[in-house]
Length: 200
Image (tube, rainbow, N blue to C red):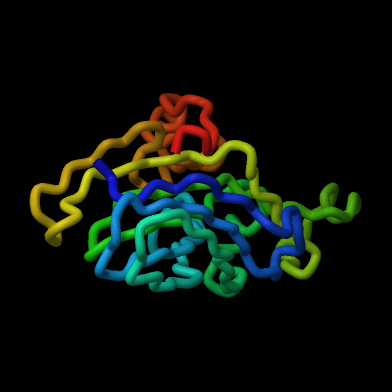
């Protein structure tokens, strides 16, 4: 049984300009004292074509964590625009929030992110080189995708198994068919049921 459960995750400042920080209000519960840190990460998927463009926006250690309910706001700077391929700047991508304990990832929450121009003229005639100052970022906060992993809470990397409830563990498997580079990713997405944070 997992010793940490995420009870709720709220996306703050959404929608917002592309360059605004990401902000997530995370509420979680520990069923017993954890002597070591939990490591939380925010990862931005820059392109469906390659993990090479994934950006770890921030990583934070929380702990040691006493038993009980806890809440914090996890904020990270926007991704570096220069690293994102120009062909992937506008449209749908994914942001992930992961948590690990003793080097073992035990939960991953993914959200679809839509980057689009708010100016009707730019929407109709988008520039060849993306204008990030005119892009709006909109996170589909109502439909997170959750993956849980069984880990050994008392030791590192021993007997780890995966319990993938409603998301392919690969970052890019969340991307919709219009963004996915292969039929395999589209097929993986089509097997994901609708879900909400209530199941976490």
